[in-house]
Structure formats: structure tokens, C-alpha cells
Image (cartoon, rainbow, N blue to C red; front, side):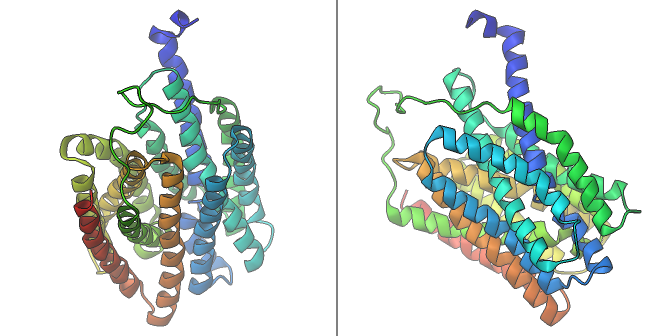
Length: 386
């Protein structure tokens, strides 16, 4: 049987498994979660939705993701985690259709909260199941293709919005729901179910980490830096289309994100995780600052590319670094995600409020850039504790 899994047959099997993971990212992240970004300008124009309420809905998405992450940090049984993954797939489909039912802010908020929760299925659970499947078969544990699917999901949401501009806001949500139905079977059938795994061991065969677990001080400093990255990411990811006025920038951002997932891994192998992370923070600050000032279309395209190329690299490298340095990698990665989620909730809420008061996104963008600059300082302090 093992022989049958060698060569081209094994490659096809791995490709199918990754296809399931990418489909999960396209559905739960690209459609259920991020479709709100290209549709936000349409809803602001055609409904009674205000910038403040739009910010609240953006915050609800990240609150849902945060709540789901907290739940996953408490649930350990593989069968339960598998059931939660499939529940996330169902929610991803349903929450697109519920957005079109009525012009009701409470309904929209519930829908966006549950859509955010479904994002944990593609981002966290599918990643976990793919990693376990690859590890059990002795293959490469590089999940870069899976995380590249997140960027493809962002681009997909922008492409779909461009293809259906003649539809009203509710019709566009129905179109996204139809696409979600198309993707759901691949997510359901191709992502491998989790299996019990033996206790992790290291190369020395002792079952103990060869690298000592980092201190609690390191975790909190590194986590605070990661929180600022979550804030900066949420501001850009929620309001990019509204700020630049074109879904083309959102599509480019997603494509850059896919490339960033691959490039971040390569740079970390060459220069180390901390130096690569610092560089990504700097580049994302530049991208946010560029958004805060009027600029030519070419520079706007550059801003979108810089932003998209760095935020997924920050996520993947930070989670990996937390897992490597912890005695319990899974729990450490979940706690790190919670830190990022706090920034994801706060960013859109503050941005929507500042936009309402000032009439522009400038102050909110500069605040996000400043917080990420402070994050670099905290990141440096955490490195001194390594």
C-alpha cells in the first residue's frame, strides 16, 4: 500500500488534499468572510448602512473569528474538531444568503459574526488537518500552498464583485452564496479528517523539545507585537476597496498575498524568522501610510501589493515561531491567534468611528501605522529574550 503511494500517485493524492484545503480557504475566507470588503461600498450606496455601522459589521467578522478561535483552544477531541470544521463549511454558505434576506443591521451583524467564525474552519482547522495528514505520511510539512489559498480567496471575492456590478447589493450576496455552494463539496470531501497522533518527539528521540520553551515574558511581548499586526491588517483588509474605490486593488492584494505566503517562508529560511518579520512589519507600515495620502494609481497598486504580500507572511511566521518555542505548540498558536484577533476586532471599530468623525480614513490609517511601529519595538524586545 505504501508503495502505491509513491511517485505520481502520491503526488496526485497530495495535490487533491491541498485542493481541499485551498477550497476551504476560498469558501470560508474569500467568500464568507472577505466578500464583505468589495460589497461594502455597494451597501453604503444602496442601503441605509452608515460608515459607523459598516465598521461595526467589520468588527463583528473578527469577533466571530476570535470567538471560534477561543472555542478551538478549549476543544481537543479530534472528532469534535472535525464536526466543528464541517459546521464552519455550512455556516460559510448560509451566511452569504442571510445577508440578502433583508436590510437589517442586526441580521447583518449576526451573519458577519458567524461568517467570521466559519473562517476559523479554513484558516485553523483545515491547516491543522492538512499538517497532521502530511506529518503522518512523512511528507513535507510546508503549508505555503494552503496559505496561498487565502490570497486566492481574497482575489476571488474581488473578481466576483467585478463580474456582477449590474446586480443590486442583495443580488450580489446571492451570487456569492451560489459560488459558496459550488465550493462546499470540495471542502467537505477532500480535506482529510483528523486522526489520533502519537506524542511528538524530536530528533534526539527523547520526546522532549531540543529547544527550551521560551518564557512567559517572551510570549506576551511577541503576542503584543502580533496584536498590532492584527490591527493594521484589519484596517486595510476591511476598508481597502472603500479607500481606493476599485475592486482591482483588492484583487491585486489577494494575488500578492498568495505570493507572500511562499516568499515569507523562503526569506525566513535565509534570514531567520525575526528579521523577516521585522521587514514585513516595516513594509506593511509603508503600505498603510501610503493609503493615508492621495496618490497616483500606480502607487495605489504598489500599496495594495505591499500590504497583501506581507500580512500573510506575518501570520504564518508568527504562528510557526510561537509553536516552535512552546512546550505545547497547539495551545500556544491558539493563544497567539487570540492576540491577533483582539487587534482584528479593535481596528475596524476604531476606523469606522474615526471615519465618521473626520470624514476620511487618514487618521485611522496613521494610527494603525503607528501601532505597528510600536509593534516593531516590542518585537525587538522579545528577540532579546530569545
